[in-house]
Structure formats: structure tokens, C-alpha cells
Image (cartoon, rainbow, N blue to C red):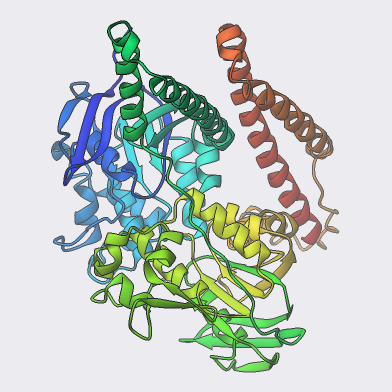
Length: 613
């Protein structure tokens, strides 16, 4: 059997005397689709850097097959030092191929980037797109991506998903985007307290497996603690008469106590609460026929909406579509060019912006939280010691004096949440709150927002988070259109007949093809034009469109049954062949369902276009 293209063997690494990994062993097989998951600060990015050869481990071996190319996307890419984006992206090609600049141009243009642009002054999303182009351009055998969707808008995420779905090499992903991981991965590496465990299923099966694993571990610890208590009782019952005979048992007790004291505890979850404070009026905001142009470009055209107390409204659209402008109009911070806007009464607003502009990198964490000085935080009218409040958000006491600029992206986002949730508010505005947060913190934030009694306006590119939190979604198409739909992102896209920022392009293409195909028909003949027949799907396509909902429902039922069977931890031991057979069928059914959904959407859009035409 051929060795894997990349393997980690007994990797050990620590910083400042603190062990980060202990004996990590993992393999990246040819064509693997792996996600690497774990808590923020647990070492995921460092482990990926070890795989990429960017960080040298203290012990163990990193094996890369000779001739195998490995490409790595860091969490914070740096494109400085190159005159143009083309020059920066070309560095992702092997040295002998760097004259093939057209390959860089193709990827940059697919990601809506100008190859001749200078890298200076790029936004976070622009820098990520250019860095993705550099990672992809060489078509490596192994692709290591650290938070590739951070700061990307939905059109870019969709493009990347489709590109990676067709990627033929091995893939290792770190991401907090559940929808992205669920679609692309077939196996999971869980980095937990310095140890890597592997699940040979994609991310969609991970969370149930993780919870079951932790519960089994907790039960084992309860049994272990009970055994220590029994042995301690025995040790106190006069062992002197049996001293020689029982020294071995006493030594075992000491060993168990040492093992218990050395055990790495499961890191607790962040503790967040949000209270609405003073109740606002029933009407929070009402817009009627609102329009605004910025720089000669329409941002909103005839937008109307009504937001009532307790609504949780998501705003989704491409970068540059005007989501932040819409927020400013809805809160009265910006006056529209035309239309009417009415704001409700008693509004107390808390705003969390994606740029983290309210954080001073020179201030300490303690001073950031303690606005009035001292060491007490005013948490919705109740004073709390800063260390206790910091622990609620997974900060350690020693970090109180750390400058904000030294924090990771996820830690800075948690600090912003800590500051925002300390204030009373009845209207909370969150602009991309999920960037850099680990999934456990995302889960808790989701629960907090679901229980929040005030009104929520949420801007996010995280489809799964929007689906779980909001009660209605505004889709912005980037051309001035903004329409509200009940439900989350998935519901809104289904009701709109597809993502609206993609529909205008599809319709334009369709119209262009029709006009070019009929431009010469009947010219110069002098005859009257024939009546245009009613356009409709072919019999075969209409029949398929009618059958697909039943097919999708059947596949969903089969997937649920297979996932239930595979969740049995004893199945692999009792029937390994049956386990493998079910796992293979699950993968086939999931792919068949994805294909059926894509075909149904394509046919439905064709039907609507033909009916409209």
C-alpha cells in the first residue's frame, strides 16, 4: 500500500512551556477531503502550519512524499511587496511555470479582481480572494486552507465551493462555516486538548460524534473518580499491618491521583447573556419607497419594509451591495434621497461593526471593558469584577493587562461581544459577528440571540448562522434591489428562485442567447412575422421537474436512516463491513441529493424564465 502524500507522526509542540500538541499522528490521503476543527486557541492554525512546513515541531516527523506540491492559505495573508496582484499570484506557480501569467489572470478575474491592481489598500475580503488565487493557481496535490471564507461575500463563497468541489487534489480545511464544511468534507480531524482524533465522516456528522465522545469521556471520569475515592478510603483503614503486601496498591493510588491532576480539562463554554432593557415601541422602523444613490450608483430602489419589536432580521448580499448603507438608513443615521422613513420610540441601540473600529489596539483588555476605570465592569447595571466577566468569554486572568492588538481575531471578536452584551439595548445591530469565532461560541451566540427579547438586525455571510437565528431575511442583489422574505437564508433563496445576485446574470445571458439565435430569421423576406409560440419546458424536462421533489424526499429519508445507523458507536466493532457499506451509501445518497437539488433549481429557473419571456 502506497504511503499517504502527507503524514504527521508523533508531533509534539509547545510555546513558553505550555504544550500545544502531544503525540499528534494524522494522515492526509490522496484526494482526501478533511476538515480540521477545534476550539479557538487550541492550535488548529499552528497544526496546519506544521503540515505546510511553516512551523517546525519540537518532536516527531512531518512526511511529505517527494515531488508532492503543497499549497497553503494562511488566516491573515500578506501580499505586500509585489507591484501587482498578478505578480503576487504568480508566486503560487512552480518556478518553471511563472511565465504563464494568464493562469493568474484567469483566477483573479473569476474572483472579480483586477490583475493589474496594486496590493496596497486591499480590504480584508479582497486580500483573501487574491490569496486564494495564489493558493489555487499551481493546482497543487495538497491544498491547506485556513479560514478561506472569512470576509468573503456569498458570491465568492459559492464560487470557491464549486471550485473546490471539482478540485482533484487533497484538501484540508479550517473554517467556522458549517454549510461550507458540510458540502466539501468527507472526514474530520478533531484537535481537542492537544490530541487529534479522526472521524471518517464529513463535518455534518461531527457534532453528534463530538457530543457522544465527550459524554463517554465524562462517564469514564466519573468512574475513575469513584475508584480513587474507594482506594483513598482503603488507604486510611490502617495499612500498617499489611504494609509490605499492599505497597503496590498504594503506589497505584498515587499514580491514579497524579493521572487525575495531570488530566487536561475540557475547556468550558463562553457564558453570554443579552437583555433587552427598556421596551421599545411596537414599531421599530418603517420604510416606504426608499431610494438612494451613492457615487452615481443605485444602492436602493423603492425599498419598503416594516420592522416590529422582537423581529430578528437578516441582511444578505454581495460585497458592495449596500448592506451597511441599508443599516444606516434603517437606524436614521443616513437620510435617503427619496421615500419615507419612520423610526419607533424608546430605541436603545447597540452596534457591533465588522471592522472592530471601536477597539483601541493600544488599550489593555481590562481598560477596554472597564469604561469608568478601576476593575469593575458595569454589566447592564450590575457591577462585576473584570476577571470574572472575562472568564465568561473564555479569557484568562493573565490576559487582563494584554494589549488588544496582541489578541487573535477570534479573541478580539469575543472582546467586542463582551463589551456589546454588557450594555442594555432593545435594538442590537450585528455586522458580521461570526468572523473568527469557533463553533462552540457561535452556538452560544446563536442561543443568546434567539432568546433576546429586543429587535435584531444581522448582517452576515454565514448561511447556517442566518438560518438558525433570523425570522426574516432581506436579499440584496447589488443592483439596487432589496426584498424581504420570511425565514432564513435558505428559505429566502428558495422563495426568490435562486440567489438574486446571480439571477440577473443568468437572465442577461439567456436574453443574449435568444437574440443572437434569431437575429437573421425572416430578414428581407417581406413576409409577416409568425406568431411567437408559448415557451415552455420540453416534455422530458417537465416530467423530470415533477419527479424530482419525490426523489429528493426519498433521498432525505434514506440519509436520515443511514446517519442514524452510523451514529451507533458499536457498529464499526460489530460489523465493520456493514459500517463501510453504509458509509459509502451515505456519501452516494448525499451526492445524489445535491445533484437532484441543483437540477431541480436549474429546471425551475428555466421554467420561470420561459414563462416570463
